Amino acid sequence: MSPLPRPIHPNPLSPRAQLRGTHEPNTHFSGKWFLVGVASKCDYLREYNHQLEATTMAVSASEGKSLAISTFRKLDGVCWEIKQQYRSTKAQGRFLLKSRGSNMDVVVGETDYSSYAILYYQKLRKISIKLFGRSVRVSDAIVGKFEQRITEMNMSEDFTYYFPTYGKSWLSHCSV
Image (cartoon, rainbow, N blue to C red; front, top):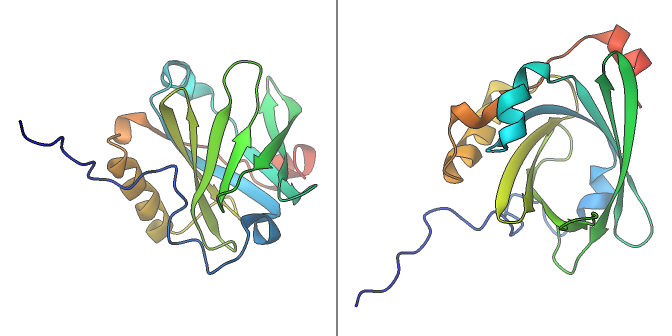
């Protein structure tokens, strides 16, 4: 009997080498981030992707090495704030988001802290990848990195969605 094949792609739930040096993500990750794109095989997202709204995320270091997350998005013309706590784990760049059902693993997969971050979210063996930027648009090179990570996770452009931007008027009403 031959041995089982090894995965071609790296384990997405291990912090990638692109994390700079020995920095803890929360010391440099704090601040405002814009959700630029997401790749996911989520049925809900596939059905309702035409309703995506611009989304911002405010990150701040909280007790210990955890991250306090406030996500702002419009829904039916109203700005909503969703507060979450990404609890630190023993692994650098890995967090746990507790929920009523199953918990979600969150990994800062790749970031330069100043312009972009690629995060992996896993819940019950389902993985989503999100691209965040410090501004509403990121460079083509960063989008290329994001799309490469999507390919490594055996997803295609059919499962990739980019978020709209609305300019300063939306940002002043629904933002950090």
